Image 1 (cartoon, rainbow, N blue to C red):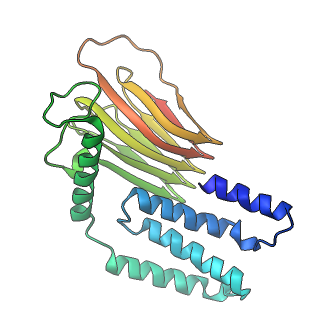
Image 2: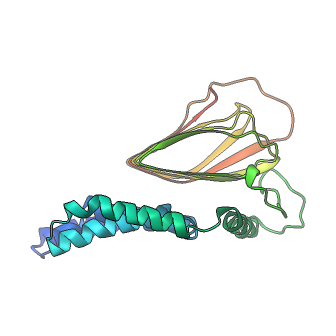
Image 3: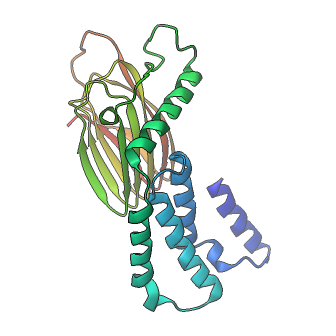
Length: 241
């Protein structure tokens, strides 16, 4: 929808229709990305709100044609202070959010009472935050090691930044789902060579590449990691080193 909207704007401009210049700008893109991240996270947390506020500030400045550069730092500190004061309790919100998401995922895979197999993720009645990966990187980067032996998947977001996720010490049963968003950024996910990877990533001016070295076949139950999401002007690399 974002790409369709950009195309329509350029199309209308070519017909001589007056489209405000701020419609296609970096701050408008920041608002759109913030809303996208907020939607994926059920509008929990404050990262998406900061992007929307920053983009909205510069958009209003552009529309009003008023120089507010001398207020940048003051407004930035005000926004940061308000976020630190009113930010939600992430532990409680995350637990409830992940319960709702797992209920939806189980509904997509069928009846909960059926035995777990390699094509359907395991049902989790109790969500432990240590078994969930939740990484948001905006204009920055991070490196995380996951040691959970009951790993349930999670979210990894990199916008104008990057993230390295090491899952070689993690373990799980059946199938897990990892949602990724790479927008003008990159993700490196390190997993054991015995895990099966199913990619459902939509790549737009970006891509997903499985760069793992082929290892020996290990007997045992199948472990499948489904990677979903979008790579827009960014990339997702799967490695085993």
